[in-house]
Length: 618
Image (tube, rainbow, N blue to C red; front, side, top):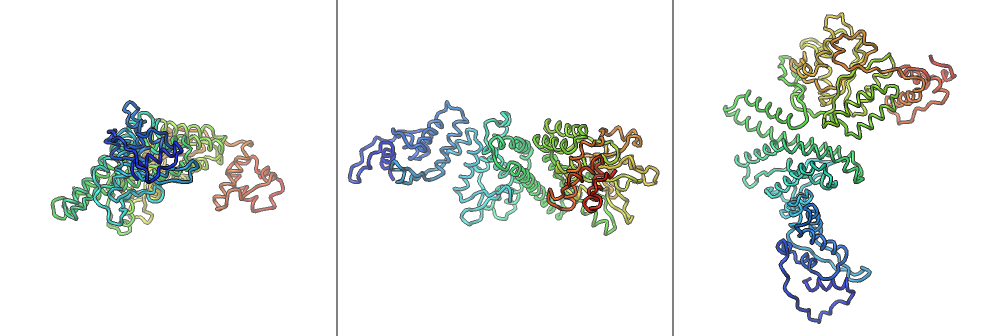
């Protein structure tokens, strides 16, 4: 189709006249004037749309309107960027069906050719979507594309569209990714007011691509030079993580409200997938940068130019750098002492994992904290003070920008059976944090808290360190139950004295595990202690805790207690919710019982029909 055919088609749509006969001679037209952006980068169809004197179909007319905005430097850059993006999407679609009759039954296909520079213009004007799409178009020109499914495989991968091995990734693509990332800081100052979910997703994709895909210098083959250049690229990306990571976190923190505002579906699922992607990408980046450096050091070590201790120091430096970039923690902070015993060596090798950074469990969002707060008040209405104290701590941290889950040590004080332990466990469930319960009643030594010396049959690390290894979470909830019932007359040490170090952040950061013979950082655990009385607690221990009174539920709380007890039994017996039901008469029997007494009574009621006589169980 030539220019005359195109203009005739547009005119037929607007003037409803018959097409010109093939025998008619096309009228002569003046030469096309010079247009902005080098005649719209040589795209004659866009030039014809822009110059047409006729009113065009709505879709084509919207492109002409976008052209007028894009070339007008008096317009706001954001408006010009959006207009350029609209044109770029139009051009990128390659073809448009244009109706030739009033009903739209007869159409012809208009091919749109030419180099796609509109995405680049959109990116240059400050739209990250344009930068990402321009990078994609540059890859497409070289039969490449980036594949990434955040939910199933969060690691971006460069693949070839022509079945060949992916070739060298050239600089302009990387620059477009960086261009999109740099836009985050300016948008954050305005609280992302003008951004839609598409801008958020484009920047997150640009970050993941930049940190995951580096030039491999394949044209250099397997030469030493090529290997060194590739290694340098990974190290550069790792260094860039220092300024990219805060921007990345800011995007993920601001994104939920933006998605909710635009009524996007599956917000929580998408955010979980994006958090997972962040962890996977950074883990791979650290591995590539650290392992490549370690590999080079290993080669030099074999050649005798670098000592083993120097290589270990370099690896420790990389791990320390990695821990400072991401919100992670090295739990075992000093080398684990070696052992000549084979069984000990097998166990100790497992704990080398704690010599590497572990990701913190994170604080929920503000909306989630509010929801958990309300849920706890609903399930424990008699413990308003305890709920408010703990949730206010979490809320204050979140409001001031904290990301890792944490709170001050809490002591719940109340009579036996009032629900203290269940409350702490339920809070852990709602926070989706691993929870360790240590019953200290009758404990007359410090083996559970500090570990057991090697050489004994019962030798093992501290139970808290064991739990961190099992869960790979350096800040779990640790419930120390019945702390007032510890035995203090044994020869194995006073448990309450051992707790002093755990509950003092400075000492807990250098906590000595007897079995590992190494310093451990246990200062980020969330410690919750329970006690029936303050009388048997030492003054130094009480000074490290915030005591909160946990009252006994009243008769008016019986329906809530029954609901909680039956649900706990359903979970313990692996039954669907609502399986266990009680009649009004059975519920009346349970009134006035404590939560602990009620658990026993419900089990008896369900298994012994003879009890269902209406008699009280207390």
